[in-house]
Image (cartoon, rainbow, N blue to C red; front, side, top):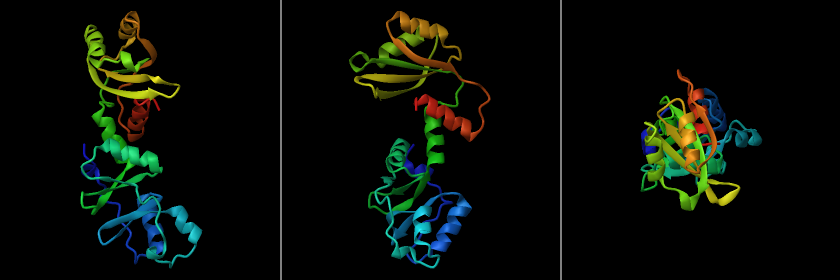
Length: 221
C-alpha cells in the first residue's frame, strides 16, 4: 500500500516552457482542476485552473507563474494513508510522489487513493459497521476482539479517531463479518461499552461512488 503503487500515469506534469492554454486543455481532457509543475525532475508545486483564469493570458509560459502547494507531496514509500492526509491538508485532489532524492515520480489522485484505502479496510466485504465510544485508557483491542469473537464474529478491520468533543475519549469503528450487528451490540452494552452507531451494509456494491461513500461512513466523516 505504498504511494508509488498508485501513481496515475495519465496525468502529465507541466514544464516551465508550456503555455497556460495547453495546461487548461490538459485539465479539461483529464478532468482535473490542477496539474503538477516539474523542472529538471523536481516537483515545484501545483498549478490550478483558478490561477490560470486569474492571469487571463493563454500565451503565458508556466515558468512565469509561481506554482502553489509546493509541499503537497509524499515520499514514494509512504503509506496510501499519508497521501490522503496530504490531500486533506492542502485541499488538493492530486498529491505528488517523489523518491528519497526528491525526484518527481508522478501523482496519485484522490479517487485512486480512496479506492485503495477502502480496499485495505475491507470496506467492500459484506458485513456490518459499529462505532464505539470509550476513554482512551479503557481501550484494549484484544478485549474488544474477545467480546466480538464470543458471538462467533470476526473483526475485519478497525479504525480509531479522537473524539472532537472530549480529548480523553476515542471513537472506535469496527468492520465486522456478520451482517446483523444487533446481538453484538447487546453484548457490548452488557460489558459497559457505549455504542454511538451501527448499521448493516447493503450487498451488491459495485460503483466507485458507493465505495467512497462506504469509506466515509466507516471513517465516521
